[in-house]
Image (tube, rainbow, N blue to C red; front, top):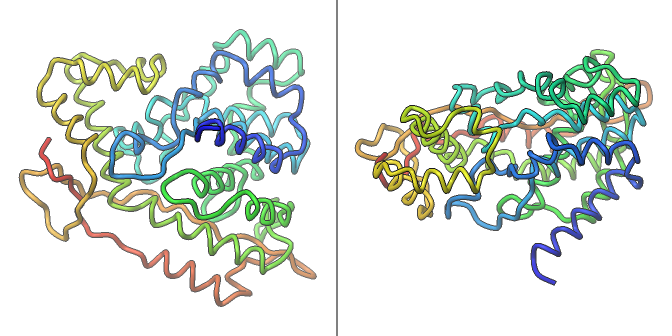
Length: 349
């Protein structure tokens, strides 16, 4: 069995951990053209296009969205909430959050979500399925309406949990395996937080600590100079292609990442072609406290992703940092984690 077949089997097993059953109604929505489009978009935001990163396996936006939907279904058995999770990335363009960087939205990374309603309403397939299920568009277009699906950092939501699990499996070096994920997941239930709102949390503080120990290995990677520089470079390449009339924004919803990369390589503009070639060959991103001239050098502060989960108590749920010095130290260490002010590739663009 080759690596990709092994990963496919692992994802199937992973899905069964998230939900022992794949609800029948979900399959029709997954098969729609609009959802199948995001199967061609990688969750790795362009980091799989350069040699700076290692140990990457394919994991698509559709696979992520299915995982989010299964988590919601497992805990709520609510069709509307589950579909809101499935649709939450339906408006994602090629290269995912790199386009948020292009839009200057590297702090929230939500700038492309506004097209969600438009895409759903313009889909005859999806609208037909919604009518059949007696569900209104406004009930599924915004997963922010459902706290089990999504909530603000550092709370635990289905979306945040899913990408934490799969980033830990497939992005760069693994931080856990399916056995650990199963142990962690089986300890999660719906709790009520300090704002009297439902939120996913843990039954036992020991498992919450274990989750934090593993998940916190990922957090610095998501604000690393390597990650930020890679995403900003792709954003700048797309911007240059657009400025030169070689790529329209609508093309990011039409072509796959492979097709757009090929368009860039064949664009006929030496500066862009050489930039992409150097980017793909690069094996390192460098840091500096001062700007570096004649190199592709940036300085941005990206979105900090982390989780301070709830833990069940006798009378009420509390944050793990309130009851565990170890967890508090993990969180404080991450929040105090800093990178150099500037990051750069060893080539100019």
